[in-house]
Image (cartoon, rainbow, N blue to C red; front, side, top):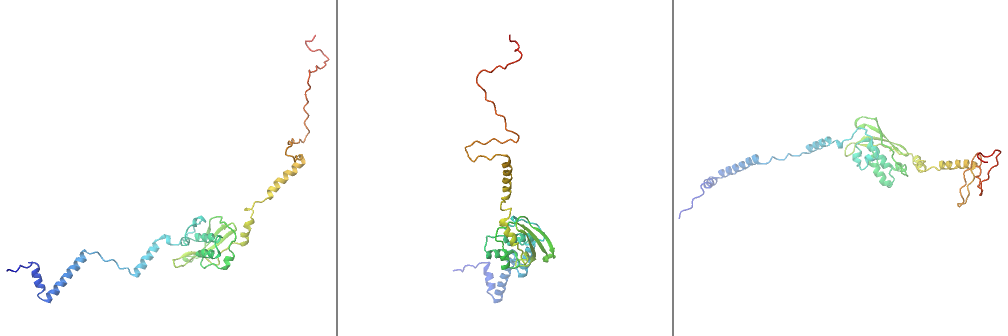
Length: 277
């Protein structure tokens, strides 16, 4: 029985590989080389390696290129409603906004002393102590207008600004300066922290603008009553009587004559009536 012929392609290769170990090593190296070349030509390029230096450079570039994360030295005046709902980080980018946020928290009497100090400390260089707690307003104080700011000293990061916030108890003058923090430079209120005069705050409870003054009404009702009593009769106390007519300063009017019933009398004349016989 004849043996089946081998594969005409693989048979010579198998015989050449198995002929010696050298041929086997050459064959394996050739196969790996072909696979490496095929991967280099048709495979995807390797991802770039991210070193710490590259990461830091990229992050700093991103931070520098984002305007919202930078502080501003432009003194754009703000109102109390303009900083409502903003975070402490967003407010700290502007000197007037930082001062207004401090004033808004300072006149807030709805929180306890501990919560009040914590909220106020978001905008100050140090945590407020017992001294500023003792000067905390005990009654409501309203902020009456926008900020008024000016640069007082320094250049660059050492620049300092003074911001005035008008309130019912007087002006609150806040000094803010650029200070470094873990999240970068930001505007912060400098120590000693500004406070309002407690005496002025206490006067708000009895201020003429909040309590009506009865004196003008008293003067208005007293003066006419004095003049009227000298020229007019005192009205009757009874509610059923008719109101008396106003008095005249000259004389009383003449009474109206009452007509008499009967024929009208003919007056006696010295001359006869024309046409009578």
